[in-house]
Image (tube, rainbow over the protein chains, first blue to last red):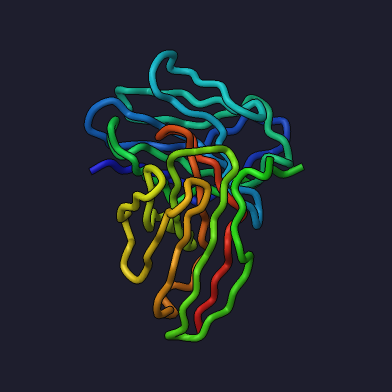
Length: 114
Length: 111
């Protein structure tokens, strides 16, 4: 069965420093991977996706993610964190190439300190 | 273009009561989904629909029913609410099976 893991409940980073939010996945076949962000009392917003192609995917708000097939990872990154990036981040994987279900990780809370 | 809207935003029910949550999208998306979000558990899929008139079970369908009579609407029903259904409910839609667009959520408390 497909699954996704976010090993850190919380990540703390100082404003201006680079940030990384980790995600590992387990799928049979080629993965379809996603990152979403959730601000307080809001629904999730799509950030970026990996379907195929370049291992470095660029998304909204200056975020990018690196797909690493050998390590089965899809870590979210940003070169310079902003206080406004503080939010809950979810990694997700589609259950199969032909499937309709998306499996979400438990989420990682990012705190960016000024 | 409102995107995905959900009604109501908040609701308190007593055990055994019933209610319907309404989701509407104006993006002409084929796929629609209902999730529940509980602390530390991410989002769990309750039911989904791949088009008007279709519904299918997700990961945690027990105690819920859904209908998709119109393409733009996806209703989630609780026939007999239980305290375990206290949660935040999110509706989402997607054009294909990739990125999803989420509504603002409904916070439901069952006492």
